Image (cartoon, rainbow, N blue to C red; front, top):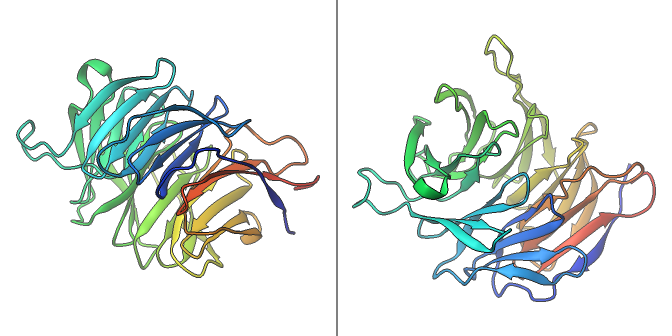
Length: 324
């Protein structure tokens, strides 16, 4: 089976540098974060900028959006983490995670993730930890817990499970760690990759985790948790076809498809049941960020996704034809 995706829309005012994070929100807007220091919200009908934050003095390296599409959490190269309320266009939280004068043992954040249930956010560190911080406006950035992987390796990416009960951490070593937030404990370690894992995505039901690595592969993991606490079976499929680092990935709302962006200047769409690429799109540069539209696709459609990459352009893609 093969699918066709067409470029349905392109942004009108591109970023001046690479796009390192992107999200399609529940309100049908798109938010992008760039190495040019800006974060922008886009209209998915016109491609126009709806709102934008004043440029940070360094690149924005991580982006996370609340399930209702209202709040945007983003993090700068220096470890400055901000919470932006899209409803009021106000910055409601700012935390300098690198400030060791404020907190003993403070660790600059790299990747950040909002808990979908609210209240907290997570930040990876260079020492292999996931730090849990308050996301409340009155106590934003106050550290509440430290989850240790036991490995002193840089945390490349962290992401909460859809139910907010677990968090996955990927490392420069190629390992992936899953923590239970209720017990604040490490429950599972996967050593599926040979090189750094730059991106990971949970399925909407929280049963699968897809990881993307510099080893040119994506690996699908069964991460189901049972009442007895026994973890899932781990790596169940390897997706190969990219010829360079896989930089970004996401799973469609219905769990049938995945999308990935690579340093080989291509986007691939994968059929997860068939374990095969069903579409390849060539891009002008490296593809650093991809995200599915969170709204389930209509019958006969494979849905839509958005991408961002080296040339600073946000592009919207939709499936073409029935049966796609």
